[in-house]
Image (cartoon, rainbow, N blue to C red; front, side, top):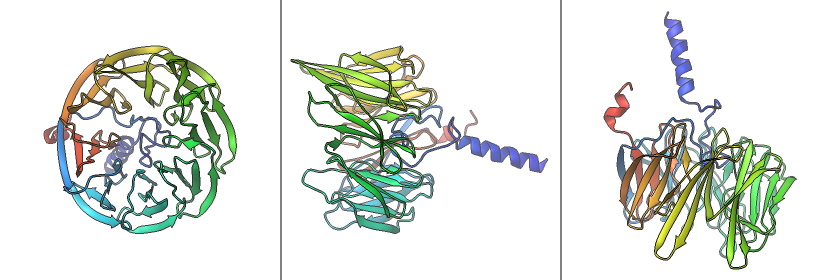
Length: 405
């Protein structure tokens, strides 16, 4: 009897730590290596209580927070430091060279080793106890160059920059290969899997044709995709099967926007023209595509949220008189996003099936925050402050955590 109970408890624990695919990716921001903003390892976000932890009142953060599998939260400060929080307390602080700051964000591996790159092109790896694993200059930073959030894959780490620099290293910073693209890399590099890496390239101007490139694990080009005259606005996202990218084309005095839905070989499955800029894209495990659009008129903000099926059918859409500066974050039953009316920030929670607003939560006056959160395996949403080094957490109440329903 005791053995059966132990087997049942172990199985329940494994299931509770897994998503619908049987895995959970803590390694990368924006929902994993596909940057799909999918957090379907939880049924829904918690939206009952807001709390704030002040770490340093003199310095703000320089990039989004990052959460490790062991629940430590990693943050970067304007004061050339990286800090770790655990159980609402600062656990350790790692000092960079004076004047060096982390603007790119963080990635981590299955051993909770952290990877990042500073404004001088120096790559770092730190273990979850704050000990340096390596420090190496891998990209010579030029004027106005900025670095993208690293991509963590099972056996290599990808560093990239706005100037088209692309470097693959192993987890000990031994270089695998490097590439130099002739145009800028926009947004975060994403991946279908460890053998199919997606790099979105932009000319940075309307009227030119941008390109999406797929590389294998050795840096060899497998395919590329362009749509004549379209400028891509963000990096491509993927659920590991399908790929989505949004773009805009200049037509005389007007702009024509569309979202493009590709298969894993770069072939177009479908595309949809939309009347306003496709600001952010998200994709669920089953291929549902969520598009956040934005249109600004005279003293007016108008954002749209569109849901498309994997075959391109419009499920629902809704408009808000707010700015939505984030993608939609997807759970099993609920989607959420941040909205602002220039005075306050609020989180909106929508029913995923029909887009009906279920709840909204005011999270304070519009003091600057990093819009990309770290989302925990319990559905908590964690933002960091740009004015002061602080963590803003959206969680359930203490009593809810112990209730059996």
